[in-house]
Image (cartoon, rainbow, N blue to C red; front, side):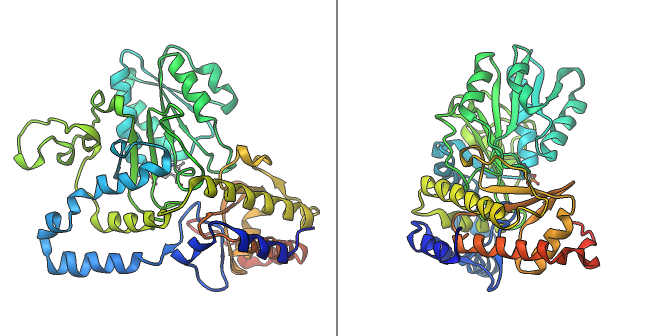
Length: 411
Ligand SMILES: Cc1ncc(COP(=O)(O)O)c(C=O)c1O
């Protein structure tokens, strides 16, 4: 049996314990949803206030140069690079994950012509599927989208495939793909490998260059702590940068935007993957969020992510074995990201009761309760308290109250 005191001791010995002070976590809340929206870094409010009050209010348009607003996409990209095992010149922040997927998938497809197949998996996050479907319907016979089950992916990789587009860590189950093996299999048949890192960056140790990723995208608002609706980012391996031209060829991706030429000519390097004007306030908040990783070892982050997930699952097995939960994520922590999931037919109501009790996770239809452990601020004792609350809710059947069945727009 794991006691609360054991967990407090684990927190004392935690090499990342100091990082929790970098966040504002409300008293009385156990926050297990950093896999969906990262907590607020303590410095973000002042930074955003400064951008608005001094840079915008005082310096007005001069801040594009004076405060280097124009440099934000590359500057933010440089901060992301070491977290994902990429070179500083291989990452840029821009747009949303969905838009970046469109840009890179279209660019890859053109580069790989006459190949025209994009291969993905049925379990991929909906926006990834929808964007690829959109590209399919836009380009007609120039593209064929093949969507197969996860276990059929390797078999479906053949010499027709232009691009393999996958999400590295599954948004529901937390299951992790073997990036090195799958990228190598793609390369063997001449396909490019594109990875959505939305549930990976800031949660597990990544090495995009070592593991052969060609392209990657990801969002800023989960483990990277960029704030609600934060800009996203994209990665293009150095050897491909000058070979790809993306279709949202706006002026910010032009070689000389302030020449105002009437012909598009792409910038060199990552700048060509920009489209329009960066969202300055959101970029500044994102930059601040990334500072929470200063001095942090991603190896420590990954080790703690695994330990927190294991602790959660073993406490659920100890305390809730009679409650009808099915463990919906890999039990082996090396095969999972920094989240676990429990499946239950009353999962929605149970999650609402938990949230009302101060333990915040989320729910994904039809029956998945997700619990994310952002290693920079989640403590072992939080996990203990969360499972104790969960056990109380299921044993006393608190979730049966009518108010926990009302469905909200965002789950
Ligand atoms: C794997 C994955 N990709 C993309 C997104 C969202 O994309 P966007 O930032 O464009 O809304 C999410 C959101 O949770 C996600 O989990």
